[in-house]
Image 1 (cartoon, rainbow, N blue to C red):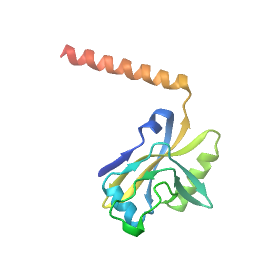
Image 2: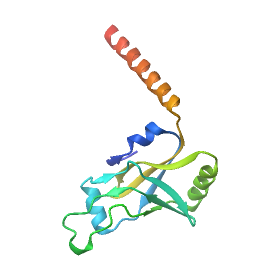
Image 3: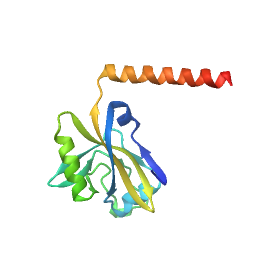
Image 4: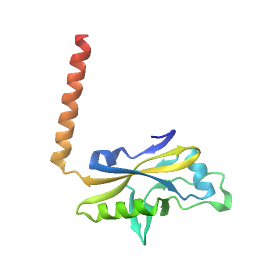
Length: 150
């Protein structure tokens, strides 16, 4: 899905069962895009929220660009995400459902533009995570056994 991945939110894939994915553009200032090009982005702990019919990325950290001078940006400011109105309505309907959250999964460049992959997910309980780890270990053991057999 991505041309050049900038950052991934691996924690989100561990903490949530992702039910739907959306691609959104992101509104950035000049110094922010320069930091993004240097891969100085942290998505862990961030989330997205719908306010007044717009989607906002909250808590994402984009490090200040060292050569920004007086035009430096706030590293954790809320950033507007760009989606079609129909997509925003669809996301809003899903998020209103009990227990669903809108989380950023990754940030990447696509045709020179910074994009954010959003996931609508249901939070996993501790026992769900243990079950997923157990299944992953079993799958890995099976693949190793098949590989050794060849």
